[in-house]
Length: 262
Length: 78
Image (cartoon, rainbow over all chains, first blue to last red):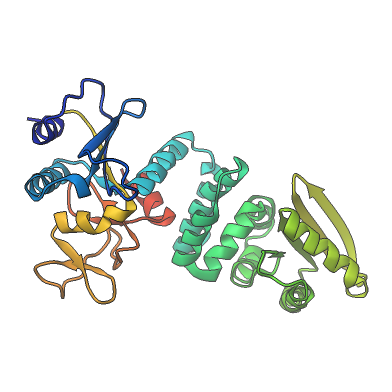
């Protein structure tokens, strides 16, 4: 007797359409007084634990344990969705070239952060919500992971680090650590960052990077709020920014200000 | 046998742990119900809290965190 047949027997269900998923849920908003609701369009049966008696709950418990042993995972619904999307993404092999290039030349933890960041970038390109994904990378890999996510999203791995390695492995070894640990190539403006903080960060980063022969820094901003903050800062602190040769690129609600030491 | 995807929603986490004979300790970490001293580990060897609980991997009672990095590892493994 299959999982589905056993479930049908417990709840006396008559589901003749294909059943793709079963979601165990809480009837949080008093949605129904039924034990379960079947969504034909999604092929999903929601079972509401609050409406199920203890005898049936025990039967579900045995059924779930048996199902796991037989080779079926049980996942939180958002985790399940993300896992499905990751399978699809992996099938496309979109960033394999970048991953294969960096795998042997960067630390394993950085590689994992990069792997997740490349997925985040795909979601970002499709205008998806990346806040939880970014939070996950930061939680696992700390500030270093956050920097890798920022650098990856802005294309620095392919456009700066890859050619750097190809031109000089020694120079790559020398610079990689300060680029990733100190984020010296760029500052990424976020909503909590004050306008006054921008020149302070630039000065601090340049103090390190110039020692390694890096004579530029980029300011990145996404969205109206951050773009305006950068523009206001450039205007109000004109004297400070006149110290640099400055190029501004703005497109699709993204701004990049390149500052070159004169 | 039909392959049916089994999921649970966020508010049901505690019940699902109970189904799997697990509970949480004072620190909010998932532990064995019969032996609360024994913490449950994820498939990559980390302790896991109720908040982080993302499910159980197929074939064995190996726990998964509900975060991008864990799910990326899982997606590569299978």
